[in-house]
Image 1 (tube, rainbow, N blue to C red):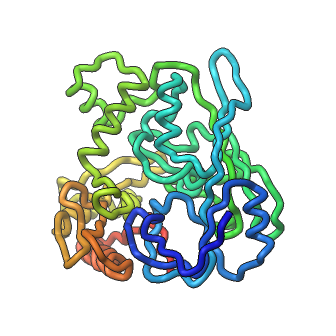
Image 2 (spheres, rainbow, N blue to C red; image 1 turned 90 degrees about the horizontal axis):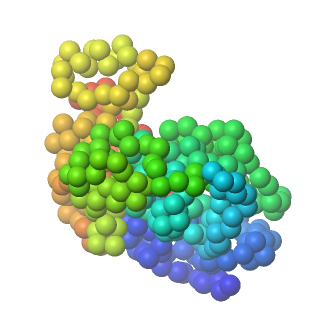
Image 3 (cartoon, one colour; image 1 turned 90 degrees about the vertical axis):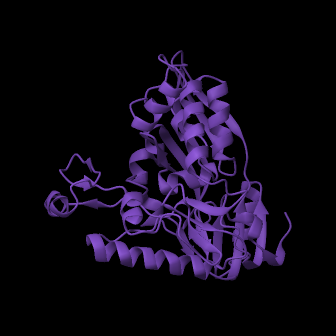
Length: 337
């Protein structure tokens, strides 16, 4: 464990923003983490894969990257298996591992960037599946007491791209491991998502396996979303907004073509990408920042952009959507200032 000073974070955030941390360290064990916490630094940022962060400038504090690895079977029956995974493991690598071993449940979540430890914070989800669907428990270190604690699914208060880690435990919980329950099966449980069905049809797959669904999801994401290695981005920048049914009916009069997904409480979820595209932002470029031409939800750094330029673009998009549709878009990406 080596502590660095004035350390570039360009390779540690998927936007490739060249911000510097006052101090930086990567920890590989609970002992490493305990040693760092004992320093009691007044300003500390916990970093996973950096795939959901936007640095608007240098970070005047201590950045701690979680590098705790490991995949262990902690319970197994004829039908189910519970895996405990280190928080520093790559999420996509975990999905690949599960597909290769016929563990069904997260094949729809392939190619989501970031680490396992960051997944519960966002309750990551895609193509009809969310982490909470397979979540069993997690362990975290309380940054105030330094105690190791366990949370169950109910404890985590999962919602749409939401969890207790964005509220009561915000800034106070350092996730060190996550346990998930999967089916020992080649048969996928979630194939009803329209895009997945279309991709399977293109590949002439009528009886899909989890490998088929995984391959379909990866093909869709590669086609729609830019690779952060090639062009800086954090995937979806905004959440899909949910509005009341009454507000939806008002919008429907003005925009009969508006796409929507009815929710169980009679609210309507509107695709943020559609709203942004209708405001003319899709494919628009302003200097070194812009909106990706294939996916209006993705803001990109074409090279050398500052984080402040990307957040300014996000504010402009929010303002235009609010003016045209009376809907305020909520950012999914964490803004680090």
